[in-house]
Length: 549
Image (tube, rainbow, N blue to C red; front, side):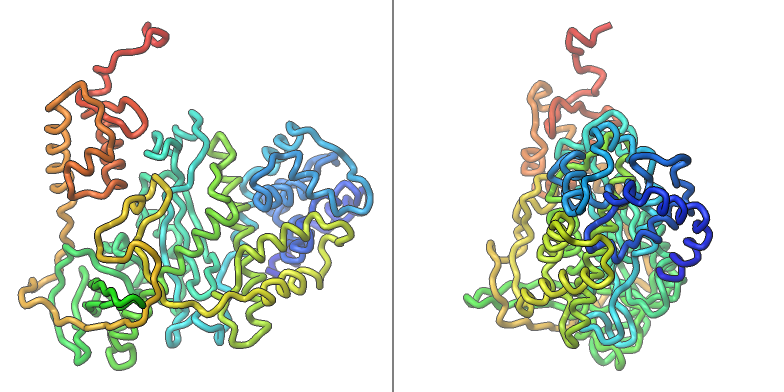
């Protein structure tokens, strides 16, 4: 980052240095408290220069101020433009140069655009762990993971729906975010986002250029596809991920630990099947099975049991999304009403998340042996908010940031993580886990006292060649016929998606919502309300009087 900033600043020296010298006070509101040390003024100017977004004339609200204003909007998502501006100027020793209107700040957003914010994220993103950071490596490999989040809600406007598609079953257009995360620190290595229609593998392909040969990629079974696995392997990175239950793999050779050599398409891999039995503190137990595929084919160097335990690290990605969606964004709907605004809004959120993770990892590294998992994200976030509005602080102080926020984080380290388990159930109505799954897990979080891993031999009957079996289309057709038959039993009855899923009994609520929405869009059925459907094509739906020609 320093090399980039210095080279870019040299290109911008003749324009920005004289501008700052002529009207320094105009730039005073452009800061992020002591967090400015990670986004120095020179970097902001260099980013604007590279993306050609420097103001053409001297304004009361320069472009650099707009960059910090966009980041401050993410620090204070609960308030509007004017209150964010007041917080930015609260720490200034002299009165602000200008007291803008909400329209002036909105125009500032439009003038800055999304390109500088995207470039700023690209400069700041990347792995943060050092070679000796606890929990960041498996042997010589840095553990990273792919995962998507498809429950980010955007404002319900015509332009957002045109880009993101129709309303999701939560009542808002949904934005899908795909990230590559370093599991040991939960730092963002890369991110892309867009409509949910593209799918996780499609978005993950845009991030493959970020993979390095020293990385071990973890993912769930949603990424199980021959073409995608081959593309990941071509980067030189290794992977460890779950296989779908309908995946059939041949046994080419067996290893003493119970795993076996196989192929997926033309890619040679190792398959590990295991049964995991969990014993809770109250004596209850439940069992789950896992089938993993990995390119780490050396069974002596990478024992199967160690890989099964390592796979649990993939859940660090869920913790990263929790911090992003709930701690920073506070579960709020994205403000912008058009695609350009949504893009501009997302990049500062991702940038702010990365800045806070950087501070937290630096704090942990200052105390050798401290796992970054023990650093509280909420503590770092609120410390950064305090340092923006506290009077007397000097924006861009080179020593105050890491010392102040880092000390607060280290003073309230979380205890070492206790092994716990609970059912996969969340409050969000748009999640597939809104309803409790009958998977044997306890209703509430319970402490684990025992974990038994039993490696399973391969099934006795397996094909001679690898088959990427995906009977999804046939299952969808069969379910479509069942739903149509159910709706036509009483064509005038409104059917909530929840009732249809319960009647079928073999589909999650999230999948049912998606399929019903797709069938309504193709006019096989008609949508008569949020998450409510009836028989007949949408063309048969009577128009309200105000809409009749």
